[in-house]
Amino acid sequence: MDVLDGPRFGPANGEAPDALVVLVHGFGADGHDLIDLAALWAEALPGALFVAPNAPEPCAGIPYGRQWFALWDRSAPQLEAGVSSAAAALGRFVAAEAARLGLPPERVALMGFSQGAMTVLEAGLCGHVPEPACVLAYSGGMIGAEAAAGRLAARPAVLLVHGEIDDVLPVAATRRAEAALSAAGVPVRALYRPALGHGLDEAGLAAGAAVLAACLGTEGAAG
Image 1 (cartoon, one colour):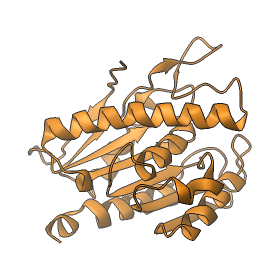
Image 2 (spheres, rainbow, N blue to C red):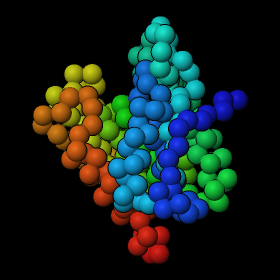
Image 3 (cartoon, one colour):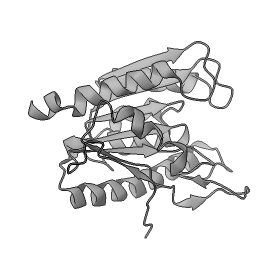
Image 4 (cartoon, rainbow, N blue to C red):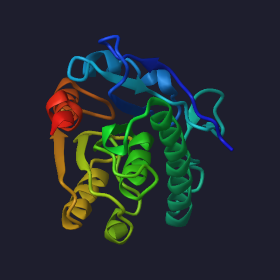
């Protein structure tokens, strides 16, 4: 069975963690690609532990980086099987971390970029990570979005962010996810960045910080 791990940050306040934020990297990267976001978002969540697990598989065909699922066959059945397996692996990791920290599901947030975005949407909405506080998906989409309504096990707050000039994963993937999730009753907000390619920008990260603060901040914890 896969045993995931990766770089960690926090809590910035030096106390016991009161929340867990899991940062899920994209294809060909590893946890170090996203862990620097923790220092930025820790301003909104000083009590959170941020963890960026490395994906379970080496990238097929290239000598560096990791993958959550293979992309050599991009047929719908293969992609759906791949993301389901990745989401299950992520779910086992999150369950172990939350149990170790003594945190309930509603004190967990998921964030992913690109292939990681696909993985966290599957994990957080389809039961692999039960009832997370929120899911942040950047430059990705949801595999099988059109059939999402029949697979949903939770409806956490979802933030979708995508650059409109993304030439790696077209923005249409996020537009389809937004439409499908909204139709299924998921509280989803989408932010489309007109001058952004396949990456992150200040506005998208600020939007993520706001969602994290709303869902996991001290006021949210008290409420």
